[in-house]
Length: 338
Image (cartoon, rainbow, N blue to C red; front, side):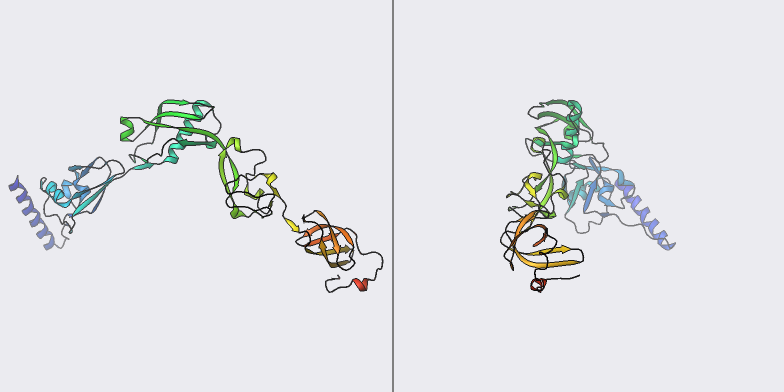
């Protein structure tokens, strides 16, 4: 065998020499890879060595489990290569080679979704998208063959609709461990609906902004017809009382923001065709846009009624001050004529 390998090596050198004389490029020398991605449960010479030639398909090591990474010393690699007459490999100064078995990872979210679909189908529950699955223990990521379909087979399943508890034995196609021993999952399934919740403490009177609200899925029994489900239904409105982070927003919790505040200055607006007068006043009550409030005319000390029409602004019901009560006296720097 050694004599044959030696003759083959000499023939290879002669071929390389003749190729160089003919002007053709010399074949590339075999070199060791530092990182290897294994696509099956065995590692071949071609996975470890670039330009391995006819020896590429020869299996030399067992690959790690799906999704796992291992390492092998260069000394063991060269020993394995030498056993198959692959010599003169450039090791590039490496001390070890890292081998990773490629896989497709199935995480907790995918398992939740598939179990919800199976439970909904078997027990006639509503839309699986509205089901929330909580496991009794933290799940680990499951790795399967990247070319295998992730088929979920549930040979045994029990579910109590009243408590929502389930107990399932699951086999996942492409998973070596699952094919040997079915995995057991236990936990609770509950129906949920979307709801708008606040993400920070909200004081009474605070106006809600877009950044204050997120949409979360909550148990169905916590969501009512009064629940706000679209942030746009709450943005720009004020809280009737304090709200805690994570609290569901209900329409009854909200009101129009107060634009006029009790005992604070306001601009009183008198309007009639062709004329607008503005005077300074003081609000006797707080109010949102459209609310009717009493205000005091700071010049005449009279109490008037008006409608809140803007921030710190009240439009008076009467079209103008009575008759000709000295318009000149009412003409104030704040008055505006059109």
